Length: 172
Image (cartoon, rainbow, N blue to C red):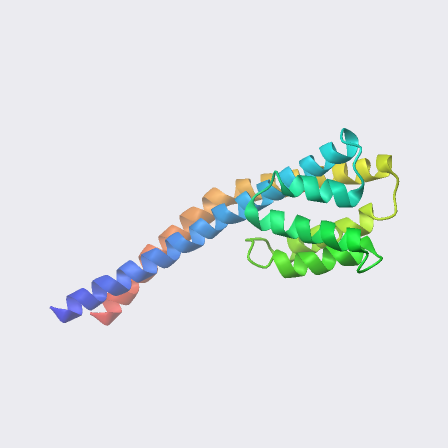
């Protein structure tokens, strides 16, 4: 009886691991979509609000999810206080500190960190163009992730169930 319960629990745990990996893919896509919203809000604040970079980051923080809001507020505060002169370094430091919990790959976090290098010393029109390029790039990343997600989710579910079945049989 204990063997059967143990085999069932091993099977259940493996299937759960497959579901967890599948959920991580959904969180990854959601994190990308939330950052796309950040970019769109920044563009709006700069274009229509006529905001400076610190003001645009602060105003955008009010319209974003919690994780990105903390990141944007920190960037705004550091830019206003001039703790570091280079906006590229400010965004890089804040991205490393505040975006660790987000379900973003290292490459995507690096792309976000590079945002400051592109926005820092440019006039308003160039800032808007750079944000448009970022918007296009993140839209492509989202599309690519969405196209790959169903196959990966199915694979994770299948491997979890099959791996659990195999372990349960071996355990039995």
